Length: 174
Picture (tube, rainbow, N blue to C red):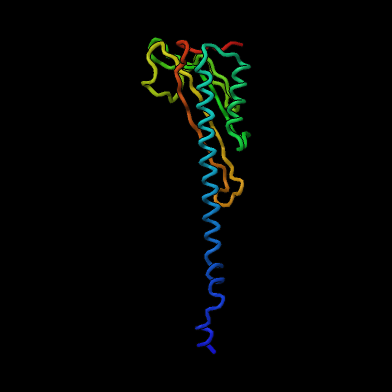
């Protein structure tokens, strides 16, 4: 009887499938979650880049137009949630000593930087005395819809620097 059971191959594929299937499903869902996380990070970075680019294309911008630019960033994030998207756009000008100072700043979810404050963490060789740059900061917390392999949010942050294109600096109007 034991010899007959040992040589019986019926059901072997079902047993192998039952052993392998959970690992394969976990691997598949993990790849899907990580792919979504990478797509969300790229969209958040692209949104910040577009925000800086739109502001850098003009010589002056109003507070209402800055708000519209933030709306464009929210549209770029689609289909991902924008509830955790935080953006800040800042005009930075180097003083006579080459120290980067905030000319103006507006935020959406991130607080605006104080006008006249020195910008911390600014690349030291980016600006010469009198030069200006548009700085866009983004922060985004991605939460996986499945929460199997990524149960906690993943936080992304990035900063983009673009020189104004049509004038030496971009002025913020009320």
